[in-house]
Structure formats: structure tokens, C-alpha cells
Amino acid sequence: MLFIVVFCVVMSAYFSATETALSTFNRIRMKGYAEKGNKRAELVLKLADNYDSMISTVLIGNNIVNILSSSLSTVLFGLIILDQGLSTTVSTIVMTLAVLTFGEIVPKTLAKQFPEKFAMFSAPIIYALTFILWPVSIIFRGLQKLLSKLFKNEDDKGMTEEELISIIEEAEEDGGINEDEGSLIKSAIEFNELEVSEIFTPRIDITAVPSTVTKEELAEVFSESGFSRIPIYEGDLDNITGIVYYKDFFTLAYNTELEISSIVKPVMYVTKTQKISDLLRDLQEKKHHLAVVSDEYGSTAGLVTLEDIIEEIVGEIWDEHDEVVLDIEKISENEYIVSGKASIEKLYDEFDIDPETEGDETDAMTVTGWAMDVLGKVPDEGDSFETLGLSVKVLKMEGRRIEKLHIVDNRESDSDAATEEKPEDN
Ligand code: ADP
Image 1 (cartoon, rainbow, N blue to C red):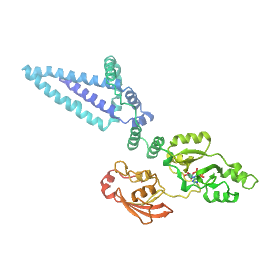
Image 2 (cartoon, rainbow, N blue to C red; image 1 turned 180 degrees about the vertical axis):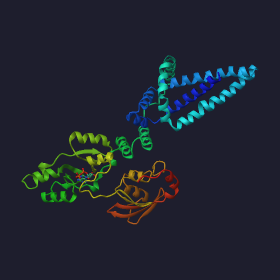
Image 3 (tube, rainbow, N blue to C red; image 1 turned 90 degrees about the vertical axis):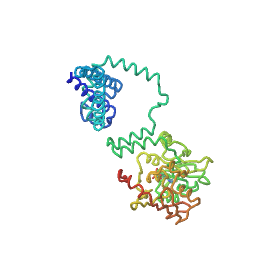
Image 4 (cartoon, protein in one colour; image 1 turned 135 degrees about the vertical axis):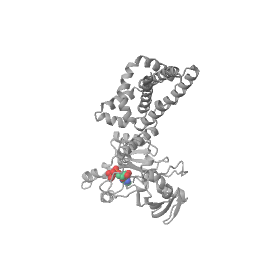
């Protein structure tokens, strides 16, 4: 009888550890093992896919052995201690302590340390038990279904974007996917939310020509700017009437009688608030590469090309003729040179700033706009300010726009403790 009691406590430990292991193992890692041909890992995934049936089996098994061990131990203690009241009390105390310690706490703690290993170890037995305990388990699952119908959670609307992103970050930390794969997937998820206003080239940077342009002038503009598409306007930039393509111009018009006006292609207009995922589809459908961005008053705010959109998924693309200008360049441990054109989001990302919690509410899209907001004026070279633990100095202006800023991150010393635990990726 003693042997059966001990055996029941061992089985209780086994069921408890299995419950923890099968509920907490890392799915991505398990899939990796299964793909390498590990049959037990395949079985674990199969069990996890039928979570309800697996958990019912484990709980039924655990309860059977726990109740059996308690009943037998009462009988056992009754044989040793003749006073019935005392023997029942002793048996209850001993069994509660034994089951709690050896049947629950110890196995659950150990299984949490090595959930994958333990899940693979226990899978075949649990799989067999799901068949043996099938009739009992079906009754309990019916009860489960009834209860979940009665207490249906109305708020359960599936997975949110934030949850999806944190799953990817977890997978990156666990080594299930590497950093490049992770950032590609995250960009693809965030891509859906981005608007034209966050990626377009502003009006001040547009290279365009008036419709009165001569062929020599246009050839000069193409070769100097290096752009392959130049917008053409009547009067001023607010009235862009079409686009001239580099190839069309040099192959059809430059050395021939053909007028520039006959090679001008129609232009597509978009608003600043259009989602770039929709714009991508529109550009593909209409076979355009460039769209002019207009603001709420109907004037030209800037332009956006396919390259600007694709860069949001795959990162910066440098053309052969592009001048390589880094938006944020780290020059020493806590010093940075930042371009005034850089997007404010990039700045927040680089310095790990959450504008909402840190109260840095700005409507600006670029670092120049942000500095203007903080300074409250058009900056001059040499102007400086302190914000969010950063010392910012305007190094160089380009007209009314900042070309370069110097930023010193004074928060480094405070966050040393944090960075020691989790080294920053550069
Ligand atoms: P290209 O093929 O002419 O190099 P891309 O489509 O590769 O042009 O775009 C590269 C970058 O240049 C993008 O950020 C885009 O917004 C910008 N761009 C393209 N054409 C012009 C233009 N005519 N004037 C100003 N910026 C432009």
C-alpha cells in the first residue's frame, strides 16, 4: 500500500510538471525541433493543438492519483494509529504536505526551467492517456464548452497589432528568428499604419521645371539633379501638370524635333493623410512611380515615389547617384550629428524616447520642425536647447532649415545600469 501511495505522489509530480511544460513551452523552438525531424517535438505540437483535450487528460490523471493517494494513506495510517480521529488528521497533514511539495511545487518549478525538454519527455505518455481517458475527458470538455458559452468574453477580439509585435520581439529574444527577420516583419506590420505625411519629400526639396523650359535647360536639370522624373508646372509649383521621364526626354525629344510637351506624362495627386499601403496599390495599378502630394488648400506639399514607400519596409535604398547622408550619425559614446531632414520618429527610436510618456508632444514630422517647436522660432546657427535629457545645438542652417544638429545624450550615466543588463544594439 505504501508503494502505491509513493507511486501516486510520483505520478502527481509527473502530471503537474506536464501541465506546466505543455502550457509554457516555446512554440517556435518546438517547431524548429520538429522541422529537424524530432518525432517527440511533433507529438508535443499535436497535443498543444488540441490543448483542451490534453489539459483535461492531465487534470483528470492528476486528480485520480491525488485522491487515490489520500484515500490509501488514510487506510495506511489507520493501520498504524489505532485512534481513528487521530489517524485521519495525521494522514491529512502528511499527505497535504507531501502532495503540495513533491506533487506540485517542486515538479512545476523544475518543468518551468526546462519546458521543452520535459514536454518532449512526457508527450508519448500523455498522448496514450488521452486515448485511455477519452470517455471521461469528453464529459469534462462538454462541461468546459458549456461554461465558456455561459461566460463568453465579449472583449476577446483576437490579436492586436501591439500583441503581434511583442510576440515577434519575444521570438527575437528567444532566438527563434534573427534581428533582420524581426525588423522586416515589424516594418511590414507597421507599414499599414503609415501615412504619406510621414515619408514624402517636402516641397522645398522638389526639383521641377516650368512648362516654358527649353530642351537645353531640362537636360541640365536632369544631369545636375540626377532624378529620373521631373515634374513640370504652369506658373508655379502649385500647378504641376505632368512629369517628364529621363528616358523619354533623352531618347525621344532631346535631339529631335519633338516638343517637350508631347512627352509629358500625366501626374497623380495624393493627400498627406493617405495610407501608404493604399498608395502603393494605386501606383502599381496605374503604373506610376511618382505622385504629387497636395495639402488641404490644394497647394503642392511635396512628392512621394515608390522608392520612398519601399524604403519603409526594407530600409534605406541608395541609388548610384544618391549622396549618402546619414540621418543620425554616432560620433562618440554619447554624441550624435543629426540631419535636420531626419524624421522625428527616427530620432525618438534612436534615443529610445516615448514622446507620449515623456510629454514631448510635437506635430512636427522632421527634426527641424521639432527644434523649431522647442525653440519657438526659426533657429539660427549656434542656438542650443536642453530637452528630454539631450543637449541640442544647431550646427548648420540651409536657408530657414536646419542642415545639421549636434546632440549630446546626457542620460547615458543614468541608464548605465540598464544598458549593462541589456547592451544596446548599434
Ligand atoms: P530617382 O529614380 O529619380 O532617383 P527615386 O524614385 O529613386 O528617384 O526616389 C529617390 C528619392 O528622391 C525619393 O526620396 C524621392 O522622393 C526623391 N525624388 C524623386 N524625384 C524627385 C524630384 N523630381 N524632386 C525631388 N525629389 C525627388
